[in-house]
Amino acid sequence: MPEFRALVRCLMAQLKMEMTYRVNFWVGLVSQMVFSLLSIVFIDVFLPEGARINGWGFWEIVFLFGVGDMTFGLSAILVFRSFLVFDSAYILQGELDALLVQPVHPLFNLILRNLNVNDVLTAVKGAIIVAIASTQAGFSWSPSTLLLLLFGIGTGAATYSGIFILLLSTGFWFARQSSIVAPLLSLNQLAQYPIFIYPEWLKIILSTIVPLGFVAYYPSEALLTAGGVLPGYALEGWVLLLLPLTVLLSAFLLFNLGLRRYSSAGS
Image 1: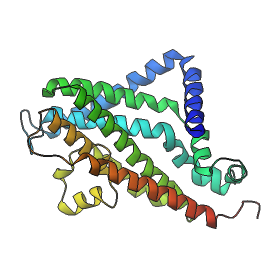
Image 2: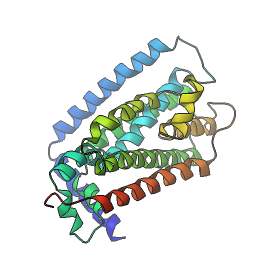
Image 3: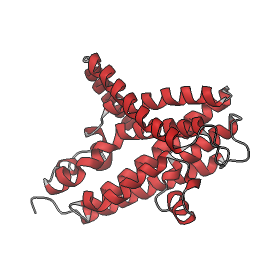
Image 4: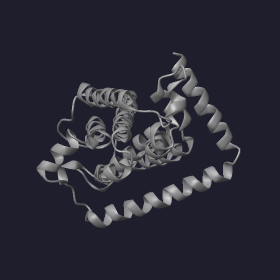
């Protein structure tokens, strides 16, 4: 696909440019790890030594934290910067007009223009945390669990991406959408912990309306169950795939609907 080749070329070009400053890469990675270490210390304070909740102990929650970093990092490379600048630069300042006259779908063009390969640091940090936590939790790695990890990271990143595109698409209706979506975005902090610790109504919201449970918790639960760490059953793979695809499709349709009502900045 030409679009996929264009995406890969843009990512590789940006990565080469960033790697010319390798010290920045390592400093960024170390600072990311320090920040995560502070968050992990908070988990240790929150969960008494040796305590388990529904089979989840300290290292299982750290594993979840790492998976969340991987999924967020991968999605952020593609869409997070677009989400941050869409309402101000593309709606209010009219930069969207330039995308509308080019022979590429405006959403894909928007993503290409706002790739941020620096967010790979978040994904790398998450992979390091997953590796350490899985070893400490007694996770049994195999080709099948490795494939399940890649599948879970992919579906989680797709869910994140769909949510960000849905939120940025509200900019077509609300020129200052950042003030509207900020409360929804703050729910992202809830995705760092097992959702069964929340009230029933909030679990339903995180599994359906704002499906942040699918960015890390449900993939992690499936992985930890397959790896022999958690007992019981996890969501089937088709469920983990169906919801991200639904979110992405809904986001694409909402963006196209917004395009129809968009009036040029010069009109």
